[in-house]
Length: 282
Ligand SMILES: [Zn+2]
Image (cartoon, rainbow, N blue to C red; front, side):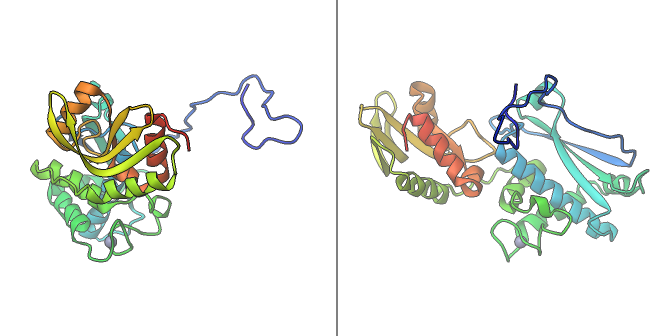
């Protein structure tokens, strides 16, 4: 028995015996489609379901559609793009994802095929859209936003999309500046006034077997337990930014990493996850 999504006063639970979860409603839609496969090498991953993955791939879809529409002189409603993890072993581990670009006209109008014929040029244009906007931090109507993608405006983040696309095109991974997200997370942790935990910033600690480490955020529990909290890139969700921190994570397991997109876009969630992991109560 499940709880009713809109319960009444008398009964909070659904009495029906055939309620199920996890159903996806779909339909057949015949059109032209271009499938683009994205491959990442470890430690880079786009984990299916991760918030960072959603943000980066949604952003990439919108940038590619905008670039393609500009080249083909189309309105943004004539082409669309979606993403999914590849249905392979690598897809499960976040090392292969797919973007599919399709004509919104039933039956297709040949636009997606023409995007495929443009080759990498359209992706270079998309990178320009992501990297060159002077008007916003994440997304605006000059770069990525339009009426068609209004439901996704909060997800669009051109810096994350640019980082991913730059890597895919040139194999270059430009490490993000994480000092700002470390500070955002630290200030929010302080605001929660967590019982029995003292947070401090950029503390030097000595880790036996590793040496001196600067902890971006240090959490000391009253029972003597110590944790290092740090933000990291959404593209390397399991890997710390320095080799010392990574070693400490592997050796002692008391390093908590939070991806930079989650911190920037949903700080309360990131903070609560950290507090839960440390075992604190707000
Ligand atoms: Zn912009």
